[in-house]
Length: 263
Image (cartoon, rainbow, N blue to C red; front, side):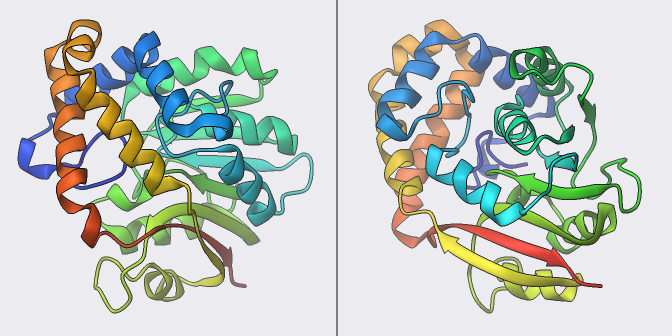
């Protein structure tokens, strides 16, 4: 398993399946988590989105440009979590939204937020995986994944599934860290092998400074987080913060990739 918010692999702590439901539920109900994220991101924090990720105003704008979806489209959010980025994008693009996430609790929270974005009746959220989304062949005219897709256990299979659900010429935009020549980290090579054209790869210069500030803030507020979230969810987050601090010097930069389904 991987960590909860999509920055580094903390498989050594042994996160259980139920931890994802517990984490989404606890974070959604936590004013402290929201305040610390807003302070860490500053002016670029999209409060309405309420992200549990590095989703900033900069990233939202780049996603709109990368997807190039006409009004009336059909957007799939892969690893949608509590739904904020997908809901915001679907409203901005005038699209229907289909969110897919491993956590049933996350999907329930996202569905409850749909009306706040004016998407009642135009958004649905279902439990699924990156490799088996449950979306029909060619249904999507765009797909997005923020700080989520890299944590599939089978990256080539996830990319093939994304291509399957996209209409011809439609695009997938997602955040990842690229390691050229690596079997699991060379996203452009994996994308081409899955039948995509790589249209763009742009480094998100604000992402890692945000994570550094946020993780430092979590550690500084450890006791308050444990009291508000509960020992297990807070403990996983604090372990993530420590692992990121340990490994960040060796991490490739956070990058937004834009892929187009060839053919």
